[in-house]
Length: 284
Image 1: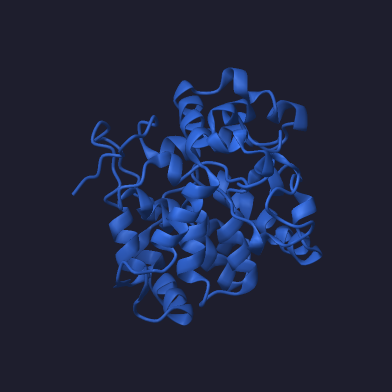
Image 2: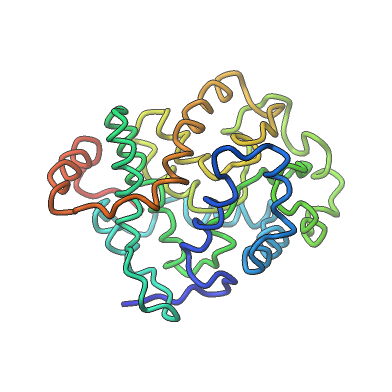
């Protein structure tokens, strides 16, 4: 079974990951990061035009109500990973790198650097929330940099000019520094734009350590963990935990070009790892 990505300007989901990896290459200066817009892939530019126009506070609250109750049935981690493998663009039938292999590339890179087992597991599951595309969600509601809604947009968000088309930009209450939030209220009280981060965090939060929960929930929150934006909404605990988010980020970005994992060789390790933290089936 193959699934065409609906309402999506990107030819395939991996095109987003490829773009992000090139945008955040090691060694680039802060100024170089902010110069990417002029040379960006036109499909990525269109992605953000849609993302910034439609990710409103009302939309986020609607999607949280729809998905965060975890009412889509019980599945194992492996069943959902196999399901994610059906996320293939019909216009590119020659693509042979599966979604599971990308997850294994990330987790294997973490494992080889000697990190704790829960850290390795975070690498394995971090993108499973992309099954939202298979639930019928458009890509702009699944991937991309995340950002708070209900308060002023940081100029450190990619393509901030596109927020002019967002209805929330016309709501005065939402365009102050704190908006609907209180100073240093904590990120747990802040609504970020909807996507796969929040979904996989919600699915796995009962089973993983807090450090891993932060990695999963905020790995796409680039304005904060890459550029230091929205510090005024964070608690001191949030700021400390973001050290783990930043530690995770390079493995997510730079593992895709590494050698293809040999599943038969590493299968026993990962089956044991998943069973250590998760029951046979969990709510999705």
